[in-house]
Image (tube, rainbow, N blue to C red):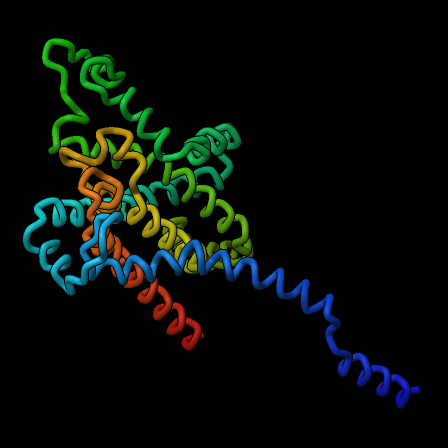
Amino acid sequence: MSFLSTRRTGRRAARRFTGRDLAVIGMLLGIPVLLDVVVVWGPTLASVVLSFTGWDGIGDIKWVGTRNYENLFTNYPQFWPAARHNLLWLAFLGLVAAPFGLLLAVLIDRGVRFSRFYQSTLYMPVVLSLAVVGFIAQLVFSRDQGALNAVLGDTDSPTDWLGDPDLNIWMVLLAAAWRHTGYVMILYLAGLKAVDPSLKEAAAIDGAGEAQTFFRVVLPTLRPVNVIVGVITVIESLRAFDIVYAVNHGRNGLELLSVLVTDNIIGEASRIGFGSAIAVVLLVVSLGFVATYLVQELRGEKNR
């Protein structure tokens, strides 16, 4: 019996795929790969190549070398404020919105009254697009008809929350953080539900307080969630576009790199080569964060 079963196993292992099997595998693997190449990597490589050219989208493509990058870093005054604003988005979402989302998750996980209501209410902004959040921000922070000035009773000389370049970036960041906090809260809630209760009990037996238990026991077990939150925060801060475009088209203190890319490629100037150079800078910054994340993950796997 063992000899027959061995022969049958060998026949099964030696069975080749039929033409139909190969066709199905080719469709399941080939179509996603083709879409990925056409939609993602194709335009990415095209942007890298076009960043070294001068092209308006209609005429001949002229090779200009690194002239676009030289003009970008030296003769384009909107670039550095936009880069600073992107970094400010990253710092605000990473150091304010994400920790606040963690705090809300911890409070809800402790079983406060009406936790279901709080969870649903705080998560509701996540289902809205950033463009809709931008329109809501206009209703709240508008100078003449905004809800904030009406609540403050500031009618004689109302504050221009969205028109003042020293204030509007912070108002938009608050609106973006309102949406980002709910997303982070849900991720941490899922992670907290997966923490082994025996770890908390062991820490309590050893005499650890609630704060010590959280920072020394619970938070280290949330490392996978922390990584996910970090990646999402970087993506949100670098791809931010629609909320500032809905407020004032990304101008007057709300400049972002993504807005500069759009203005140069599809704007009146139609400087596709120059806009591609800005996109490549944004790509390099994104790859820098991705490479750092991969290096940290590989080091963490070796240390385990």
